[in-house]
Length: 406
Ligand code: ASP
Ligand code: MG
Image 1 (cartoon, helix red, strand yellow):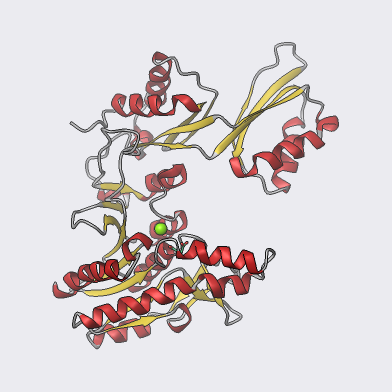
Image 2 (cartoon, helix red, strand yellow; image 1 turned 90 degrees about the vertical axis):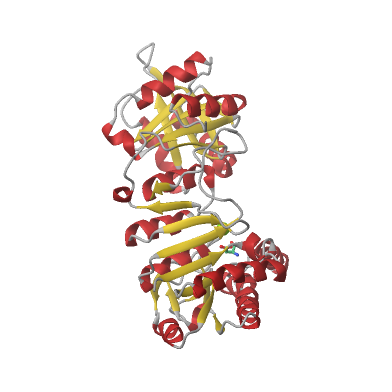
């Protein structure tokens, strides 16, 4: 008998018919003799609607009331799922965050899980019943409803799996797993049987948007094995696991890209100590996150060019801040460019293999693609290129690292 958490995302529980199909997956697991805890999201699109209503009611809303409103989509679905299971002859009951309780911090709208009390759930299991938990919500220290941030029911599921000591946390979604690259762009992309937490974190932040990033961090910290799988087909998906569980590790596991960044170049900044601090200090103070930074050597010995990237959502604010500081920073020109993408090759195997970056640079140069900035970490090499080359670059790199499907 194994303990398993099954989490169903919005598209998997988009209406009662879908909920019924999801419930079949629960039933199958129960009939294998396993103890199953179900976590549900709101129906696809519902949370967006709720957020819109909050903004319409109060543009500068009270975050505590925001949580009361946006958490309701999950309340509806956990009740419906329990009802559908009961109709199938499986004893089930719903649990809201406060009933468990799933205790969180008081950061309304983006609360962190503090503690999960599993006594009630364990009791239900001993009674031969299936607990159905509303994802995304908890209770704060002030006794009020909290939510965990958008996509947060993944976090609920992993937190529960960690506390319950579950063998697996199944995340049912509308994709059938994690691929070596976005299959909509790279036709030869392959589904990965397994991926490490660290790689998945890089993939998630790179736009693979399959799992909520914080849920992956939580799974990594607690060693929760996460299984990303399709709710529409009964096929094995991708297991997100510890590095030790992967026997044959590829050097490069996947290629990711992000269109979420924009580039700014400051031309002819005085080349003297303190300049970088003067530029990036105020940006940090304003909460602007800077990702890649490139500084060229001064050809005249007096000035230098500094190029860096920020999230597109911070782009305009960042340009404004810099223009305001133009006098003090003393640069000649500011060149904004939002027509760029970041392409990354990712793999824990890079730790023990040299030449990964070189293969990337060579491939891009053979395709005539100019690299505008580079950054690296232990398991990732990222480059910034012009937007129009994104697809060409992804496909070429996918082939070079031997990732193409036969
Ligand atoms: N329903 C919430 C959202 O749309 C939580 C989730 O789906 O994970 O963000
Ligand atoms: Mg989701």
